[in-house]
Length: 288
Image (cartoon, rainbow, N blue to C red; front, side, top):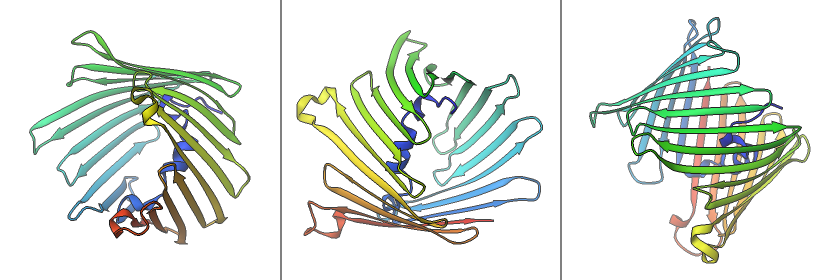
């Protein structure tokens, strides 16, 4: 297996616990299409549970496979323009460079970032440079061998010459299961996660977190989830945390290019209260 990035050491369990749960918004719509010249278009729209909280984004992406250059342009309903240029395996083998420009016409502000990813068989290093804010730098590296992983992250403010953040993580990853222990937020927020692909149909995972700044009063947060693949076109997911919040999700491929998702979240400790304690969401994805 390839060495993951620092933020992806616990990715299998994080994906199981967070992805494809559609209750976070009352409605989601995503439309994907590809023009004859190779430009891929993606339009996203989301209606939040708050009244009038509707957001959307349109994105165009073009990849020149011969040169490894990718250009992505996105425009959101908040009038934010995002332009990203990627060079993958162009400058050197295993090296990916990204230049991101974020003008915000409404506030007359802008952002500019440069990201570097360098991957080799035994390590994965990244550097994120925020050129206009600070400037600041965040870097991380993960080394691995025979499934064992160890990584660290550090943030640095160039103007003040000070370290702004640091984190560390260790893990073990094979195709059937992964386990990870992370210490983020300047080694104050600890997490332990586990993911197991039980068989071709069943996946299970759990995550525990503890905030050292909160002391014993903060307690340990625990969340468990499972995914069951009904057949090649449908799956069901469920999760619950120690606060009694349970979530269910169902995903169905209705026909080639059309996917439907339904999700619900229930506060099991407030079953007799108003509907505000519970959430329901729909998700539609169209691909052409």
